[in-house]
Length: 149
Image (cartoon, rainbow, N blue to C red):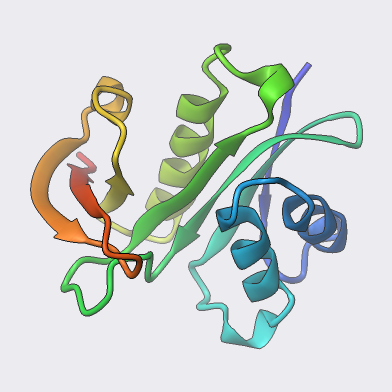
């Protein structure tokens, strides 16, 4: 059974999550983990959504003020959505995003952006294309937005 944890730097699972996120083979994981190792830079609304089975990492995402598109007017973001290979194709990525949405709404955020190259995934959760922009690596990405009702 997957358990979803909404973490802040003061959460008891923060250190465990940081270690596990740092160890994945996708560059966004170690990048996020490095940011997690500097809790003083976290804004009050920012969170990590950490999905586990027991103590094993199933997936994560982050609710962040900034993502990989430089100099953008957009904020805040659901960032770094990741599901471990053994847990893919079970709807976990969408559930992670929904947990980030819940965390955002709890602090009166009115909508979220997602930067992605995926087509059709986040649209299932009513995200819509608002822009196309290059990320810090020069890759063209889609910028999606969802306003909360």
